[in-house]
Image (cartoon, rainbow, N blue to C red; front, side, top):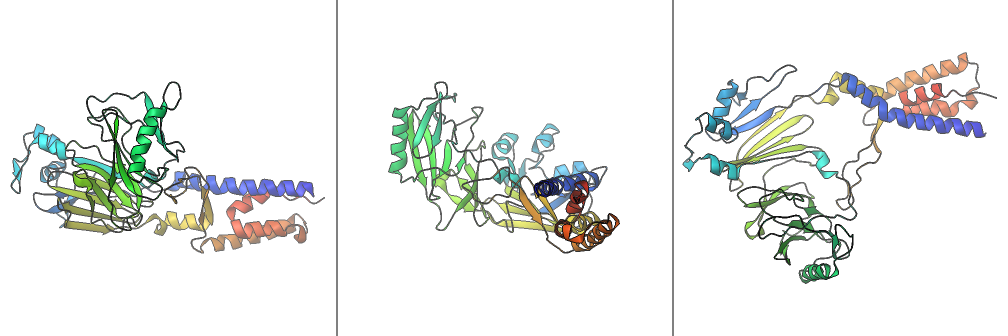
Length: 417
């Protein structure tokens, strides 16, 4: 009896290993890259330019009417993206739509960010230690690190001792503003290599939003009013030269927002059908407009938005997803399920970074292969002159796990004693 249990334990381990490794090997050998188009918006002629790629080279960009441009012509039509190169070659326009364009002002207002799904899958940090820089004067490394659990604590980086006086001072500032410990989401720049120290943006256990700074050694802690029923999923601090912006904020209902420095104003951006855990978004901002590009498995959407956050124009394109290609159909035919070591973000409070994630049985194409493998297994049992009643579990494993189970039971063959 013990040897049978040992064998089935080995079979189950083999199935798990195969479900993780074989799909990776398949994708390594046969995966086909989808070259997602790159979209730019032109403030000169109010149109989008689409750059495409094939397996060997970058194709000439086209506008929405299909007119083809050289790379140089496209750069000249999109000066807000290529201002540095155009300035060096003397081709940067003096003004666009009555707005004066100079390279210094462009640098102050140019913003380029991108969010990929794994941005929301960072490992949970139980202690959440972070540096709090002095916001006045020259930025220098502090001698301690801050954490916000049941209270605010400043821990000396050398002695690992808590500075009780400073901790109490900041804890009282938090309590005065109604902060409910512990902290949940923190957004800021921990590096000392920056032009200014804006501090940290923090949500408490109730989801309320606050801004923490330190001026002349004293806490500056402000509650930020957020819209009713507004729940924060993710925050990304912005560090831009014009000091007008603080954060990008993604709400629990997947709306993209900007937190402005003036009066802590939160403004929703008109970007639709964006799912942060599944889609990638690219953001470009300048002194004339914003542009947002959302990439999904089978589509691309671009939005040009003015500085008052109204949509100027939009572009949408669909393409064939991998699941409908031959490689995708074969994948689902061969593998009824897969195991991955990363898990999509679930609870914003506790993010599992490494964990088995089961994905499968999404369609029924695998059933045909399972039927064939089940028939082959029956044939092998007869050929080896084994008793069916001693191999029922093996047949059930093949029926349920297909190729993985078939390989496992034949590597660790059932022996009758």
